Image (tube, rainbow, N blue to C red):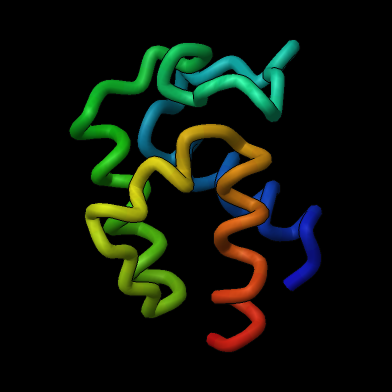
Length: 83
């Protein structure tokens, strides 16, 4: 998967979880939870969806790696190349 494909996938998952999510003006380097008003259950839904779609096991201690859109792409890129 390319970096753009990973980014699009993350945004698609977020949109599936919160259909009212507004991506206009989204800053890839700021926390997604703050910008999109995601709560901890929404965040867990994102992790579960990654597991379901791509068989990715993301340890809880690595959740901070998924804080921003940029960090999601950086974290997932090598994992999705292996998957």
